[in-house]
Image 1 (spheres, helix red, strand yellow):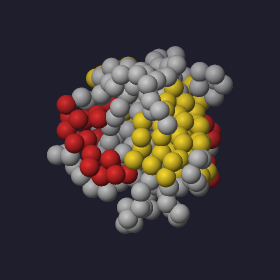
Image 2 (image 1 turned 120 degrees about the horizontal axis):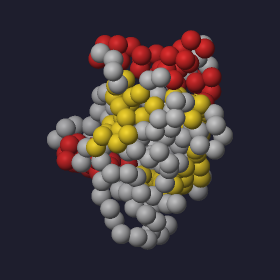
Image 3 (image 1 turned 90 degrees about the horizontal axis):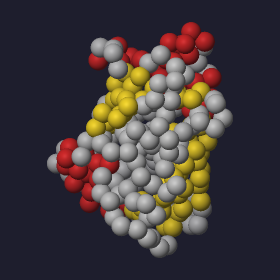
Length: 241
């Protein structure tokens, strides 16, 4: 698997490159985070929502995967929104949320390589809690534990309660699908309407997991009220167009 283009560092240590492929390699993650990991974040997340224009589409190809475990799970954020009762839909449509790497509780050590990169290059964006899909016009809950840190305008305790409710809805098994990887498997997903969960069942095993990822540059999210997301810190995402 080849790569072209010049390396551009940012996004808290992730490699963001136009025309290049990122290796999702468990051996590199262990060095970067200071402990064994099989993804940069083992919480539900939509890719890189700390930036003002998160990737529109993500492609992931498996190269080396364990015989057992290591599955990836996706959830449908449109179905999660539609599963809310109407009063809650109306309530969350007017909310905005702050997104940053790690969300409310980062899973990496502050003195790890990744932790230092996040502190040196903070990326923070205010997104609508409900996003209107730019192609289908569908409404989707645009919050997830991996990046969403707080609801803007609420007290910390109020924000946590609202996020807990929404995170429970987003991760409801009724909206999810689980994918088993084999060498050569390819997954392609719409990052504007889904969140996903990296493996959580491998950290106690001595196995290697290597996949290759590329992403397509996305647009700036828009809420039902027509308001766009606003960058608080950090540059826009630059990926494949």
